[in-house]
Length: 335
Image (cartoon, rainbow, N blue to C red; front, side, top):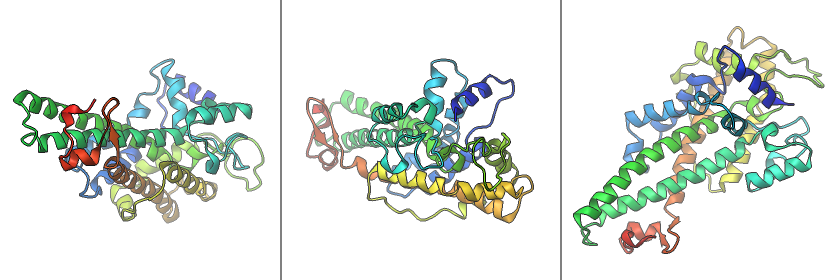
């Protein structure tokens, strides 16, 4: 299905469309994840100010739509991935067999007669964004270690000031990178973002007679959320932190597959009119999917912090973050 053509038409319409949980849902996901960050994360990420900032930043990828070309054609497909009824991504790979890079993914899709811009590349926005966060955290650890051991390494006042300024900037970059990336983690818990049936069932076989009319997407993730779901409904469903102990690719694939498994339950609710007139079942379903996203975001951020402690920094002179944090390596010599 040529979803990207629909997106282009929507962007050209006079009325601004609602995308991907809408602003309310994305704010909830971002704020609730931050509110439940483990204390192992840096303090600047656990403040009320950071919670508000990340909640707002998580809306940014939708707010930036309509910026023009090439921006939109390069950015909009990053919000979804179109899995067909046969389990393939438009005849290409499955979620379980995603290639390791977006380049290889596009190559596989082109061999199947389509491409990443038609099929969407949400999985790679999630994986790449997580890797960027790991790098941000590793560089932050470097600057924190430099300040901690400044006396040991007999740093000058100018050198101390440099690391203090670097740390302040890195905290800002980390907040922005985390907040914007949180949007895509949120997108992935909305079942229609993982399917060719992204706005009503659409064309093709429909043996269960699910609603086909366009408009279900925005009705579910924006109108219904705004009218019926409160932060407390979602917060009550958050799960305790559980480290993945797996690769970010495996975690992403499993997360997307679990969301896709909720597509038919969502369409059953839509068929019953439960997103027109709210029922306990439709409220619970929607709050649960938002909670799944907030839980996943919290867990992925915590895992990124752990992973950053194992990182190696530098190009010419390589140093392990663990050495910097132990005070056995001088951060000034890192190149």
